[in-house]
Length: 373
Image 1 (cartoon, one colour):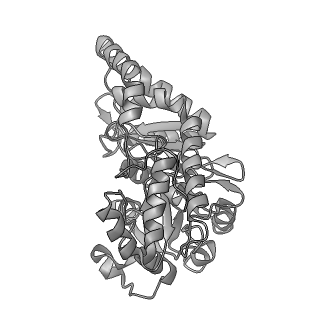
Image 2: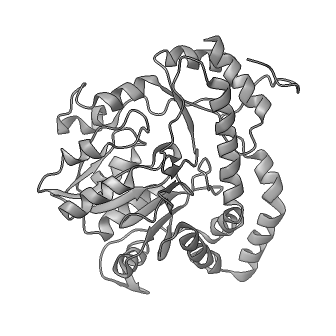
Image 3: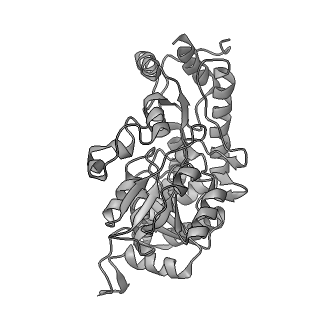
C-alpha cells in the first residue's frame, strides 16, 4: 500500500470533535448567551425551531425533541400503546437500548437474525417470528446503513403491525429516496456526541406523521401532563434543553456537508482496504449509508484489534455479545446457534475511526496497520 506524501500520523483517534468545536464555538457561545438572556432553558424557542427544521429535513410531519435516544424508543412504544403481553421483533445486533426500551414498557423483545451483508435485520427472519402477540417491528439502521424498509413495511402492513425505526446512528441515511425516520409510525434518533448529528450532551428526537401520536408524545415527555399541573397519566421527564437545541440547529445547517465528509472517509477505506482478506461495509444498492461507523469483518478480528491498540489507533468492538445471549434475556430461552449470522458478526466485526475531519493520511495509516495483520 502506497504511503501518502504528507507525514504519516503516529496515532489516530476513534473520534475527535476538537476541530468541529473550534469552528462552532463562537456561534454556539452566542446561542448560549441568547438563551441565558431570554431565560428560556426548557422547551423554548430553539427547541421548537429545531423540531420544525428536523421534521422538514427528515420528511416527517412532526418531530418531538426528547432527552435521549433511549427515551425516544420508550416514548414511541408507549405512544403506540405497546406494553405487557405484547411482542416486538427486533435485532440482536445493536446497542442494548433498542431491546431495553421494549423491556421497559413491559413488552417482550423477540430477536430475528440479521443479513450478513448489511448487518441489518433480515425481513425473512422477521416474517418467521410473527405471532398473534406481535405488535411491532423495530428495525435498526445499524451503523448508519438503512434497513430494507420496503420489505419490512410490506410485512407490517400485511400483519397490521407498527414500525418503529431505530435511527439513532442514521441521521441523514436514505432508503429508496426517503430519509431514515420518515418510513415508519415513529422514527427515533439519538444526539449523543458520537452520532452523525450530535450535541454536546444527551438528546433525542421522535418523528411521526400522526397527529394523534404527536399529541401523546408531547404529553408523555412532560410527566403525562395535558396542561400545567394536570396529569392524565404517569409520563416522563424527557425534554431536550434549549442550549443543546441551539447547537443542533447550527449543526443541522451543515449536516449534508458532514455526511459527505463521512462518505469520503468511507470511500478512502474502501479503496485502501480493497484486495485484503476482509469484508468492508456493503451499503444497500437503493440507499445512502450515513457512516456513523465504518465496520469491517474478519475472522481474526481480535488480532486486528491488538495491532491497532498497539499503534494507538482507536477502534471499537461493536458488539461483542448479541442481545439474545445476554444475561438479562436468559429467561427468554435463546441459546448459541439460534441466530447464527448475528453471532458470527459479534465475533468478527471491528469499527475503525471515522469522523468528518479524519484525513486521508490518517486513513492510510489505519489501513497499513490492518494490512500488516
